[in-house]
Image 1 (cartoon, one colour):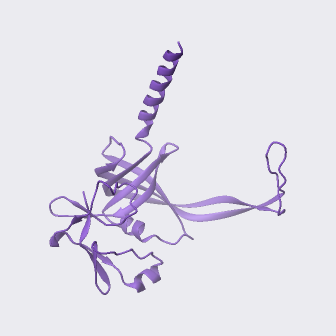
Image 2 (cartoon, helix red, strand yellow):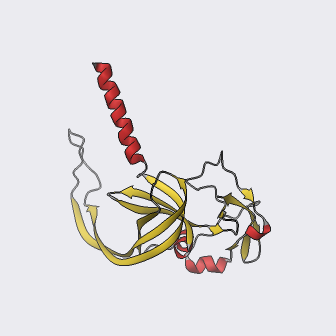
Image 3 (tube, helix red, strand yellow):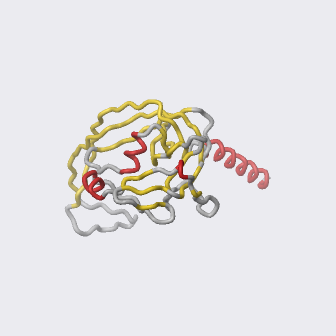
Length: 215
């Protein structure tokens, strides 16, 4: 009887996890179809303790005296629909997907996300939460004439197994340019990419991608 109960629990847990695993997180190369923006105003509370210490009671709970104040953040909530061209990681069985991305006005822009969101094609990462998809990653990709996708090299991509997938040397016709002018990054508050050899060939105001991940 115990063994039967164990097997039942194991099968239920396995099937349940398999059913919802594909809704956890996915990464894909896609073509942007449409985007709509909504201005949002979110309230949040700041809690400040009026004590420097915090007594622990017998139940290991801490009850400091606090004061709270209401604050607001203004931002843009974007709903973007993508046609999925190539699924890189995760499971998803539809041709299109709509996800939400939120950008608050006081946050500095991220170069990679800004470039990807303005581009027709991008590599997008999204995660499933509360019945909706939310953006977690964005990077611009470059299509080639023979239907390949060029992703400039970085050593921090969360969807790449660096022990199995290696950058390829690009043909001259496949090489792309990336801005490296310090003035551009300082004005735009962007973080300058780490352009290391042999993946990039540095010029005065730009760099040429010579080796990259190809999909």
